[in-house]
Amino acid sequence: MSGRQDDGARREPRRGESGRGSRSGPSTPRDQRPRDGQARGGKRDGQSRGPQRTAPQRTVQPARRVAYDVLRAVSESDAYANLILPAAIADAGLTPQDAALATELAYGTLRRRGTYDAIIAAAADRPVEEIDAGVLDALRLATHQLLATRVASHAAVNESVNIVAATQGGGASSFANAVLRRISRETPGEWEQRIESSARSDDERLALRSAHPVWVIRALRRALAAEGRVEELDDLLDADNASPEVTLVALPGLAEPGEPRRPYAPTAYGSPGGDPHHVIASSGGTVRVQDEGSQLVALALAEAAPIRSGERWLDLCAGPGGKTALLAAVARQHDVSLEANEVVPTRARLVRNALRAVPADVVVHEEDGRTFGTSHAGQFDRILVDAPCTGLGALRRRPEARWRKTPGDVAELVPLQVELLSAALDALAPGGIVAYATCSPHLAETTGVVQEVLRSRTDITELDARAVLEGVVTSPIDLGSDGTGRVQLWPHRHGTDAMFLALLRRADTDQRDASAEQGD
Image (tube, rainbow, N blue to C red):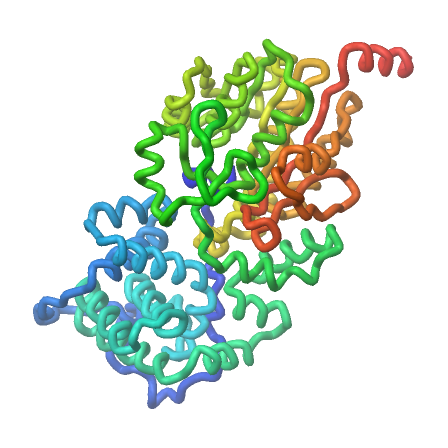
């Protein structure tokens, strides 16, 4: 399940990908290389070696230490920054100003990691793979401050050197100091020109400039080209690197949206003052953080056809429960029952927690979604399949995902997505509707999955999801078209995650009987 504001704990295949231009840029003469911390005895550069004197106590500004700790957790444990950063800020007792600084430093460094690695490699005159991981994260953090913020150069260098000294030792700090001073001597524009000069193709140059892996750029270009809007690629890449605004959902019938209202979902509004904690806590859970695109997907399923009293709805891949809660609130208004399914027990608990704010009895199953259709065949009138995906549509809020994913992840996920959608169609009652959604614009995960499933079904027709969504939104929305009626939302065009939506309807009994008779 994809990475988004309402589902930061999504299950995603984790696979290391460097995304680094480790040898970009002209090399520094060997006699000018940093001497302290060079590799000896098989050690990585920047790694402390052998007995050392006790390093003097170094003080590190709390916001920078929190940002560094987040970077280390992401690097070492495949942690999700959007999950661990709030807890780290709270544990450190940061002021609002320091919390904002820690957030910018952590997220900004993670977003542009590939570009910073190319710069670090050029300044150190060696691949970043040869630099100790703890030192490398400190160098990345400092490079972001030097080249992308208004932090004074001396403060960025000194604080990061202190971090290295405190965590890695004196020899490593000397190495870090030499590398960072070399980086600080050139402007951001000079570094951009330097690392791009070694690129082997236009896509590699764009990858270094935009801090996106080449394969991601090509996937996004193909998705935009399907709408005839490939010229929007630069705007999309820029949007991926911008800090997103916090969007809240007011569960219908339980809370009213505040101000400022978002342009499309009737349930969505912006967080007043930025930090939504007080608003969420005082609402008792009826207001929560949720991307507007995620809200639109759930609302589109509810609006795809007139709701009849007594319908049964299902959220097949429910964890962690943001869309489930929204569907539950809508179902409550229409005398409809909702069930949810989440195969991972810890995530099923998150779904139950999300549902506490909704006064309704929602059963949460813990079954494999791929076999759910067999065990619950023909039972549900509407089903949401918010499928596990690469999360390439949420790179604004999941900046580390771009470096963590590989094309191999797509190949592994697509068969799962096909099985989940097929299972959902089997679980539909005659005339029922499935909403297939992903937080990825990758064509293999979106249109490709829908087409693959439709090839093997004669009882399914596709609805015009664009027309349905246009009936949901509160102001006109610019939806591209690939000629199918499917919906692809975009960060640069709509200010949402890049959510995909297709609506599929199962034939009613009479239609299926007639089809069978014609086949005879």
